[in-house]
Length: 217
Length: 217
Image (cartoon, rainbow over all chains, first blue to last red):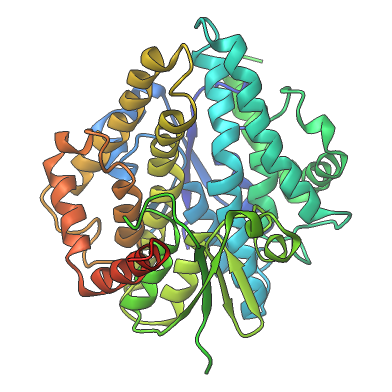
């Protein structure tokens, strides 16, 4: 069986901090104990027909395994989770709830976080930036408050670690440096628990090596 | 077997246009030929502990079936699709790709559409509204352009109608009245194909009846 091939940024804008979406797929593959190959793509190549045939929205990651080509980190993580142990519970109801947390991370928690990040990147010089940022912060806090209450003092969102936790931890990590997570100590501890997993460490080091190599170090 | 119970807005802000997220679940249940019951919730009740126990982010829809309680429209639609015919292909690869389109609709296409809608609702009186709206329109157009190219002159996104199309059509419908979809005739025809399905019609009429009853008509 050939290794699946994923794509990742040739030069990640996060400078090796593991915030790009390939990190989710790398982590899932490491949890599943599945070896994989990585093909790096430049920002120019991502907009070319060859990459758009794999990913119609011109992003990373993509996933190729034999004849199967997938895009969307959520779908790729779920595909891996369904075919290997360690990322979804065996019980059908617990499994459906874990899938629910994958969607919650991507459709409910991530959008206000991405909206805030986008504003700090592309609206910083706009006249309205200073006035609008607190509104965006508040939207993020609203979600974190609800998530923090649900998590309480549990280790993971619903029983054992699952693909839902994997996705939620990677989504929350996008707030690094924003000064918002600090208000939710249980979420900080939750992220740290994710980051302490051996599979996470291996995935993190692998994506960091790409940055280090590109930086010539 | 008791009917599953879903929640929907007691008074939907869309005035019966079927833009709220319960429409996705109703449509999936109709495609699956599964009878269901609806429990209506008020905006006040959605923020109370009883509802938050079902949906930690205080939204609709939720889905209860025996002991199983789910939230997130994507997870609910996928749960229904996995247990009934008509929403996912039998072939494993085609199935994974259809799930990919569910995620693409929710994580890639919907966020800029929701961000634009939110701005028209809550930023209309802000000093920056006129200057910022074209930026938001452009982000939505970028996604529609890519989606339109991928769809081409096909009926559905990947072979036969699937849960991916169901989700994408409901996401695109949120642009109704924005004057943006008109630039992409193949997407307009795609939405119309979705809306013409008997299961869609039944779901639409059922949600519309809630609005009509609340309006005393």
